[in-house]
Image (tube, rainbow over the protein chains, first blue to last red):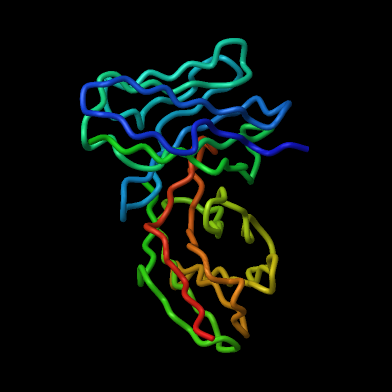
Length: 114
Length: 113
């Protein structure tokens, strides 16, 4: 069974540009989560999808971030326009059930904004 | 509100020595607690978890952790460190609703030969 995959693994963009990160969850997992780790800090929750619906987006930092999950399969996280403080590692995770004790994490996308 | 504190962002141990990574949590309800490990260039992998029942939890690769409610702690231990244990370790508590995990800042473990 394939795990959670994320693309790209690394992205370097200039301030003001747009970047789109992609996450493919484990097949059959209805729940998809995005997290972010800014260097040296904790991994922080961004948002949670159940199928194609946003269940909780309380962790989204501002309206420059847009997450979508059309069709309830893969998800994208777009940052437009990117700012320096957006640099970090963006993790995606998925779980089968909302109450599942385990979330399966992808390898992350390292975003550097210069 | 829930939060996790990991004491020590970097820990070094000699190969064969005891590994102890500290984690304290704050939770207004009985917590579900987790330890994840991230090896270089890989995703977060679940090491072990506490949900209910026995407070001493055994995980993969010889790691274990003990839930101590009175101390609000969930420290991770391994009796004998191996070179392959070098990685970053994250302690996490799950929210009441199950939507999100709250992570600590991580502890980078170095194993010295």
